[in-house]
Amino acid sequence: MPLYETVLIARNDVSQQQVEAIADGIAAQLEAESGSVKKREYWGLRTLAYRIKKNRKGHYMLLGLDGSSAAIKEIERQLSLNEDVLRVLTLRVDEIDEAPSVILSRKGDERERGFRGPKPSGRFESGRGTRRNFDDREEFRARNEREEQQRANATASAEAE
Picture 1 (cartoon, rainbow, N blue to C red):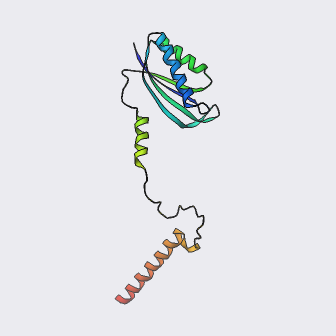
Picture 2 (cartoon, rainbow, N blue to C red):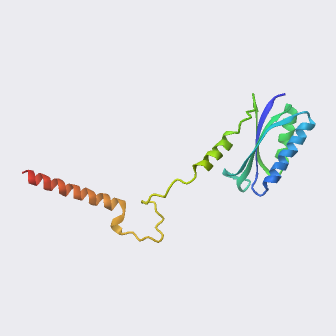
Picture 3 (cartoon, rainbow, N blue to C red):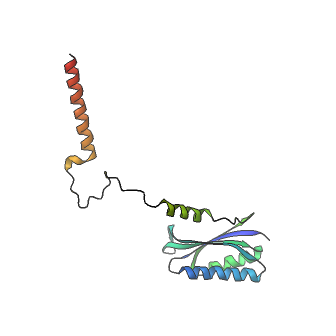
């Protein structure tokens, strides 16, 4: 049977258990038609690139499916009727990779990074609790440094004469 990968986005109002229940329903429906779910990954609650049906976030889930095209079309139809599902994308693939997807492996890298050190002080400070002088701004410091450099050059040239 052909292999498919389906990514679905569920509303952020539902819980992770409800998203898992949707995936269980897909698995039960596929097994009834002699298919199977080869891979199942919950990617978590993620921010959407743009609003979808007034939602800014959604629960993402990846499913690797093995089933007939008629069964996959029926699953897509059922998911499109489900009010908790915002979007569904199904692609036919040559093989289903058993390793964790790029999304999950990237999540692991973010956790490993941890503490990056203290924030450097500079021009992007919030300004709360600290009073800065008017001459403390970067453009004034650069102008003052340039004027001092010109004075030093003028003094050096005067001494050379």
